[in-house]
Length: 233
Image (cartoon, rainbow, N blue to C red; front, side, top):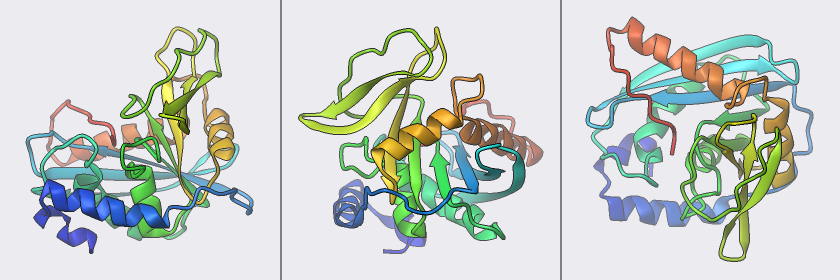
């Protein structure tokens, strides 16, 4: 199944694609140095077909911006929580293919395996690009957790039944937690450590925070004044 064909899928067919893809997910220790990290975000109105994608590259761990790429796509796949990858991945892949240098790991504004099908956007994207990927989401999609204490970097495990699928991380005091989970080819512990390294005084880690700003600049520059920013899952 090619991403270009996603818009022709029914929701039931999309779920079947997820179930097939999840067999190839690898949650394992990334055994190479991380020198470049990428952040990705998407912007769209849920009732419109235009999708704006942006990726920003940084040195790691300094987080100095060294590159960026954007893409604008169109899709008729419906807005369905849990299946948003089928709307978002094609435009993200277009942006990815424009990058002259590929990052050692990607952070995406959405879920990794903290997903009913273990196939959040970070996992889906990581499988298609064979890139190590991490999901850092603003909201919980699946699982249960205990509220972390109100201190920076307090965390609690996110469970689906007895399986740990991610963590709730208090990235900043007096802010709601973010939800971190590995996407593909990176371990749970590494995912948490990397996201903590990317927290620079804001609730959202720097790679996805700057990708968010970048993609909305792209959207405005193309005459779209919409103010509804939707996260990747």
